[in-house]
Length: 238
Image (cartoon, rainbow, N blue to C red; front, side, top):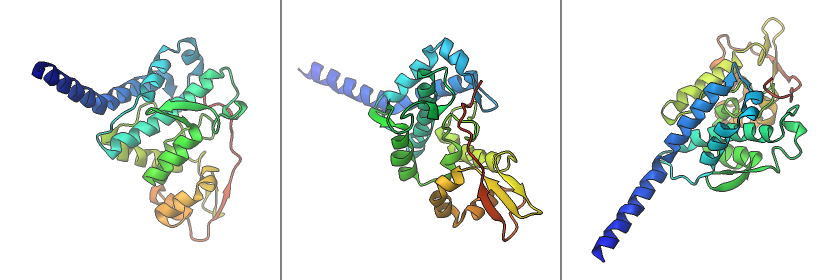
């Protein structure tokens, strides 16, 4: 009896340990996938559609129930999972013009993430935005459209997540095609992201302007007029 009890304890401990460590394998898979299929923010949907095995393996890994070792592990997992599920949703409908061409893409299509059935809106708003209260995530969550911030060709990693989020925010805000600033006229045309999630940027730094100035090389002049340009929802790939 003692022998079986000991074996059961060892099995339970090993299973719990494997569960806790499992996200590391997911991060490795996500990193390899992004390196192979993303270049300069453009996703090679054609190649992924031709061989879905790596994507399906990644989607399966994201669906498992995990026990996270830290908040950084959990946050990095959900950011990666969102981007993976966006690609999965577009591949399910491929060839497709963009995410809005898929009925219910954000609010009705559900995916298994960390053992729970979630839509992309639930993943973004009910988990990532609500739980982490970090406006920088809007440069890390990529919705599959051309006007989204560019998708990185790497996975988000717990140990480097803070620097990755800072770099993504800086790169987007300093990109003249993303943040269209005319210093002489004191105007700036911003992505609709700054309108849709205005409260997040205000909560982070007091105002949208203050948030932008954290990452701009040259701060916006006082009295700069903010506007938003039209969002391009066409697919972020060939």
